[in-house]
Image (cartoon, rainbow over all chains, first blue to last red; front, side):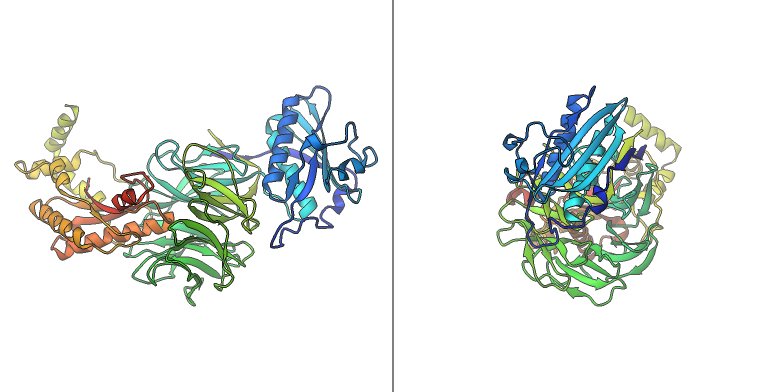
Length: 439
Length: 174
């Protein structure tokens, strides 16, 4: 029995600083190249009775998440000049920070109150000597990661005007127990939890837009059938168990429809169904292969993979199946398409001339092809982050299949977590800070 | 020993019931309703059926060994000339054992997308099914399933392994 819980934490605004947050954009994350902002993070000042291990843990989660965001250079504390500065403006010397090249500064205090941790966080623009954000976070000490993630997301917001994704979840497939099963973990690789236990083959998890459900294909009843796992109840229901393939679901971002690939008539074709798997419309009808539908964010178009011209290529069509356009022409094998949340790019994995696979993005009309990976093993299964600023994908660059994240322009490519087992088919939900527990 | 006793026990009850029960799970109807019904049955049932109807014939295991796999080119699902020879041999095995039903399982190598490979495996299984049908095997005796790139024979990441893994296997339906 799986259940999810929301963490409990109380967030208070301290003073007026927070009201102005986001007024100025320090890091333009919509720009083609992102200039990382140098930021200093001081070790939280620990109040009496605080466990210093927790304080360090909080600091480590925050600094690694700020670094992983690709928006900041977290300065090395060995460079710090300041010895005993206070937390508030006027209590520390701005020059101590500008002299080491810092533009942003995060100062914190940590106090234990019974089972709770109370963390005050202050974010400054040290160049202009301005407070950007000041908040107090209260939560259970055992959920210190939640407090850390909340602080990171607020700091990202203070400098970019967009909320960060720390504490969001990735679903994926792993063979760590010998059979392919579905798992979920936090964006930083923590809180890993196994979600299927049927010991057959479980593939391609896809989050519902609200993050409460996961759809996936499983052979639990000896055929590749489509199932929905409700994370609130732990219940798995059958969506489509027709003869042949029941695979590659995409949730309509605006409605109650799914696009799926089914082969009960023979060839794998794309259909519109409701969430219970009832067919509303057949969208493709060719003798070959049609898979991997992905809705545009307005729900009006679908990108998909078809071999109607020989090898697999990316196509778009209207949601009623009309106006089919081929949008990839380079290479003989382009597949795994995912339409960006902003609607202006489609990401896919294509086979290069040397036979390896790389990640590309292209405009929905087929123009402006951009290659994001090169000479780094096979790079496959790309998916957008829920905010569209990142792409998650699978790469073999470090020997075996592991999950990586990069910024949408291809910069800041890094492995989420290093494991000795294969990980594949990542899917990312924007639902933040929920805990999946197993009863 | 336990297994044999169990099989004999089932035979004593009714071989007819077992045969019809087995049929239900092996071949899916063309238009199956959305919610799949799970038909629970002892795994030994098909073996028992075969033994009941053809006591002097080969065992299921022996027939299974005679059904050889066929291989495919990368990203292709057409039947190669070498595969035709194998399929003709498999058709002969099926003709010699008219009560045997086969599930054709299509597999791919590890390259490319999970979803596309699932579709490719399905097309590979369907290609073999169609070819066996042209050789006179009744469509009702043949079903298909795709495992995509799951369950490779050789997990290595090289041409030799890939060529081995792009295949159809012929599983006597249980």
